[in-house]
View (cartoon, rainbow, N blue to C red):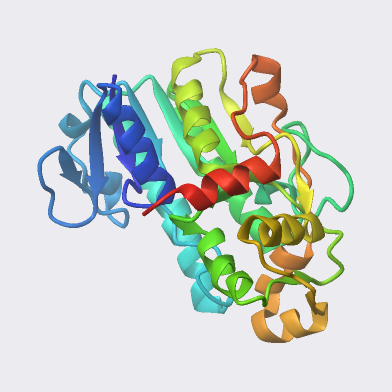
Length: 299
């Protein structure tokens, strides 16, 4: 296959590029800086991403992973605008380029389980409606931005990713230092659920979706066993052989992080319904194995 990937320098994009290249597939990295070998340049702010339609000619699939980190700082007005434009505007530009090129047959577009909002103790799958709040609205608009590609006949899969566990990036590297110093702490009540997935399984799921033409629309990329914050805290402390007896009250998190604290104190319990029904097999279905694998990964 020939696969074009945006966001190829991020946590998931890097691992996906490595996996595809290792198995002999040709990866075209779509980058914003001056391109090197095997790369094409784009500008997500420009019409059609500034991409010549010929740049996507012959591509079998596009995987769109661009987007500013959700936890990159407090959700100020400027930060919220960046989160939206980095996802929605870039998706609109890429979809315009894809439809102009009359290719590829499939677009795997980044999304997030934030679609569901705070689900409390209730387990949800892809059939659940959109929730409320900034992140749920952002994800809803993000997925809508990819819809014109589907209307043009492209198979579009919305990758509703959970928290990806790897020491290469994302949440885990932020947690490791305090836990190593015995400062690991339960956040708020600790009963709130986290929907997560190992980096290995995320990459495997993306490749599974590339190969299965019968799957389109939203697909939850999460492990089958969401865990509470208390369980995650205990398992990470056990994996690092450190105690974790501290507790950060909800009001302290709200004072420090503002609206972003809602993503730490809210509960999101999603299951990978469509992947399970399709027969996808997780390598790390449980949190203990996923943490062990994530901690063993090097940058």
